[in-house]
Each structure stands twice: as structure tokens, then as C-alpha cells.
Image (tube, rainbow, N blue to C red; front, side):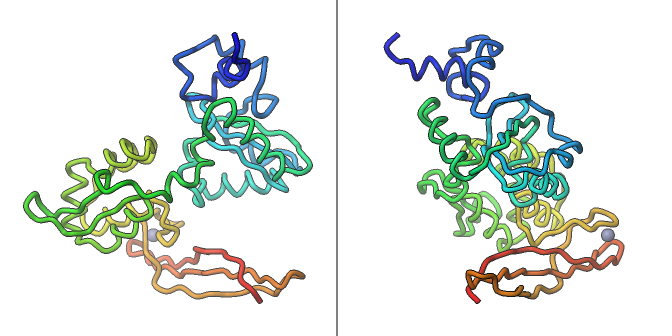
Length: 282
Ligand SMILES: [Zn+2]
């Protein structure tokens, strides 16, 4: 065996390394040898709100125990609680998380960087949700999504990544959304081109029509401006939004929040939500 690295990969990252599953060694051998993060594999759930308040790194796994994300935080409890309470609204792709591992680590940023490098050496690629290019990157024209209203009615609107898709969904006529949804085109494109199986499944199950369909698609694609009514769960778009900036920090930066006001169409409940947070120069 002249390639010790791949041996480590096959054995150690067996449960994580999607590409190497065909070389399956029993995973119980793998577990004992090497993991990106040591320690117990926990089930994601309500209890994550009680992990220690410590600086550390964590790994998220999907239902097949494939590593999908490596992250870190200055306060694991705070980060996990936020994920739990918002159901990963900052990154809906993380909703595939079923298991996790965590580990205290002083300099977590450095540690995450090293773990990702190590993982890449062993597996050839970084975990799919650490790959921010995946959603940002544009596909070549032959893989684009071209909107139609009917077979003989192209709209001359196209999307080349998921962000594009979200933007185009806000503007094309709803008849086009219904046309594609009825044929399963959105789900198929998302699954085949972006390998986002969970998102694809979620979209394929949608049976709404009209503007409801538009809102559901936007919500699934992570449009932060679409919010669920806390009373009845109906999706709404904001009536208005405004910005608020905090006090400048020592480094002269201020945190600017964009807040949206909603009025539920179904039950008339009004509610607010922070739809954007960004650092600006004071
Ligand atoms: Zn409502």
C-alpha cells in the first residue's frame, strides 16, 4: 500500500466521505481510527440548547451519517440554540442535519481551517455545505433553468444558480411557476444540478398554486423576507422594511439590522422579523 493517506480516508472517514463509500470498510473500524471531530455522535434535537457554553468546533451529518458541514463558534450553546430556534433559517441547506459531533477548541477559526484542510486531503473535497461556491457558482448555459409559461411560450428568463432561481421566481408570472411546478422541473433541476436532495424533495411535495406557490418556493429557497406567521403558519411577504444601526464598536463598525413588518393575510396578526444583519462602517 503506497498511499497511506487514502487508507486513512477509507478507514477513518468512511462515514463521511461520500465519494469513497464504494470502498466500504466496516464503519465500526473507521470510527475508532480517525474522525474530523472526536467524540460521541449525537442526535440533533431540542437538547442541543444545553451543550456547554464553550468555544469549539462542530460537525453536522445527514441521515446517512455523511459529514455535510464543519463549523466553529465562540459559544457552542448560543450557536446551536439559534440554529434550533430558527430551524437553520440562515442556511436552509443545514436542515439535512440529523447527527452532530462537537468538541471544545480554543482557537476555533484556526481549528476549522485545519480540519477542512485535513478533510480535503483525505477525501478530495470539503463537506458540501462548507462549499459556498455550490450555491453561488453559476452553471454553464446548457445546465441553466429556462422559464416557460407553456411549451411554446418561453419567457426569456433564466437562472444559473439557486440564488438566481430565487430572484427570478419573485418576478416571473405565476403561470410559469405553476407550469414548471406541475412538471416537477424545479425539484428535478435542484436535485440533478445542485445535488440538494432535501430541498428538492421539499419542493416536489408542494401542491399550492398561485401566489401561495410563489411564497412557498421563495421560503424553501431561503428568502429571508418570507416569514411564517407565528399564529397560524401562513407565509407572508413584508408590508414594509426599515433599517436600524447600532452603536459603533471599538473598530468603528456598526451592526445594521433590516427589520420587516408583516401582516398575516389569514389571521391579521402583525409581527416583525430581522431579515438582514450586516456590519457597516460607522
Ligand atoms: Zn396568521
